[in-house]
Amino acid sequence: MNHDDLRDWSKRAADWAHDYHMTLRDRPVRAQVSPGETAAKLPASPPEAPESPEAIFADFERIVPDAMTHWQHPRFFAYFPANAAPASMWAEQLANAMASNCLIWQASPAATEIEQVTTDWLRQALGLPEGFTGTIHDSASTCTLSAVITMRDRATGWDSVQDGLTGQALRVYASAQTHSSVDKAVRLAGIGQRNLVKIDTDAAYRMDPAALERAIEEDRAAGRIPAGLVICTGGTGIGALDPAAECIAVAKKHDLYVHVDAAWAGSAMICPEFRALWAGVEGADSIVFNPHKWLGVQFDCSVQFLADPAPQIRSLGLRPDYLQTQGRDEIVNFNEWTVALGRRFRALKLWFVLRAYGLEDLRTRIRNHVAWTEELAEAFRATPGFEIVTEPRLALFSFRYAPEGGDANAATEALLARINDDGRVYLTQTVHEGKFVIRVTAGTFDCTRDDVMAVHEVVTELARA
Ligand SMILES: *Cc1c(COP(=O)(O)O)cnc(C)c1O
Image 1: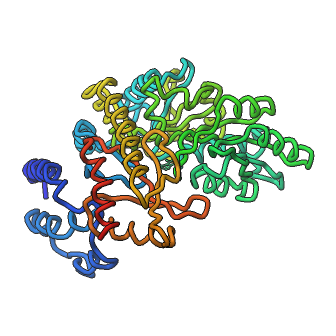
Image 2 (image 1 turned 120 degrees about the horizontal axis):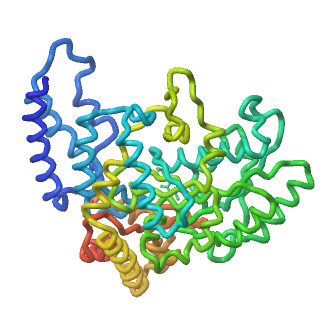
């Protein structure tokens, strides 16, 4: 395949993509294949001779789409959506064509500068004060890891950068509602799972600031070193929202570094009416949110805002001889802010999406998702046999099926399997206080009210069957 073939086959791919998106509603949302089925369709050894684009494309059409779960399907209500607006896909085609590794400023100046400008646009869109600077990582997990490593090094007076941990028990605090990426970060940072202290929550699953303060004081008294706090604005299981202002006040009083995980809910803050849900966030040191979840900027695009980038650069920034940019002290080299050296040109799709839709259109979509989620929850509340287990928080709630005289956990689990085998909608589960519950997150880029209300239709029909 050469560049002339690429031109022809890119056009074929664009036409294929258009047909795919126009007919998505006809496909089952979740892949309906068994483990091993796809691998069995591939030859066991690699080809020695070139194969034609025709043969490769024919196999793609024959093997791949039916074995995919369709994340852009308007009836995808599982996990969290990973939205891809058309303008984002368009930008990715162009970034692909240039295929640059934007590791430092001079490796692709436009990538660095568009990243600086568009993350500042996002800062303004979210209502964060001036002074926060943004950078793009691949995922929220990596942003959280970067923040936890910074907490670690700051708490040891930066000794751990050179010496590693030398027996100190550093402590990081979070509620049990925070995402597992926080657990992974303390493991990877060498702090250890046992030193991640899960703070009690109140009846609404919000971190209790008084319990946080007690834990910090007990640790200090026992000779352990409180290093940092991770707050969640929109937990993954049920959407828990910690009281940011109160928790940050406690953390600052005890000189802790604060990271806010707003991976999915953060996008909603482009709507001023939702900002009360993270009131006080401007006191944090680090904030992560994923435009690749709810804003239409496709995976991967996770933005971390830093009140001061210097501490994180002190932990992560290396400048070996081969990366020196002589006489250029004014430039930013984003690889010094993040874990990986290599960087994709992710800012391009952010730029295209913000321009192609504008904030007003993006706000309308999010407001619709929140309103339709509430409407759907009301429909389940009004249906005998169904219980709302956790109330809607933005575009997330959970319910269960509790038919009279039946075991609700078993009935809900069996119903979920029927729903996803049916394929018209896709939902996933969590376990909340021992209850097996079905989570609903409404928020794919192009879903309509009918798509969201179809969840009630399909679920109640399958429950009766
Ligand atoms: C999705 C999610 C994450 C993980 O995001 P990745 O970008 O996949 O690493 C972390 N925290 C919360 C609250 C999330 O919703």
